[in-house]
Length: 89
Image 1 (cartoon, rainbow, N blue to C red):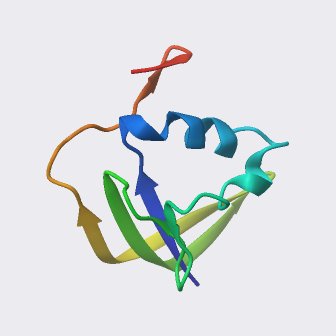
Image 2 (cartoon, one colour):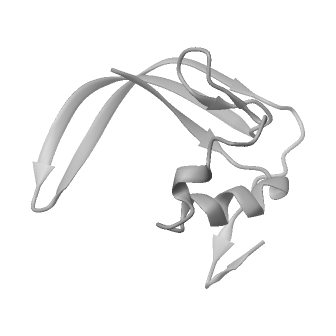
Image 3 (cartoon, one colour):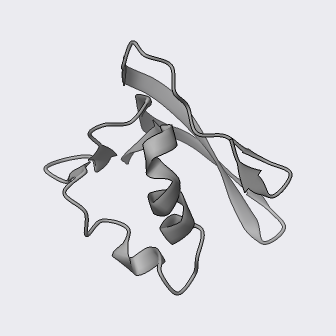
């Protein structure tokens, strides 16, 4: 199984809120910001880290996913969205 880790930019605050809201998360791929052709990824992300599942570790009620990086992309300008002490920076 392959997946992508997307590092968000400051322009993705609304998307971050959608993804972190259980009732709204079903709408996360509605935007045209996504490339859904193969492994879904955010086209204008700060960085995309494409991975392949290497190992799954069961821990209580969760599963920890260990991935092997197969490709990465990033934009030059650093404008990463951060969430600190209950608010975005």
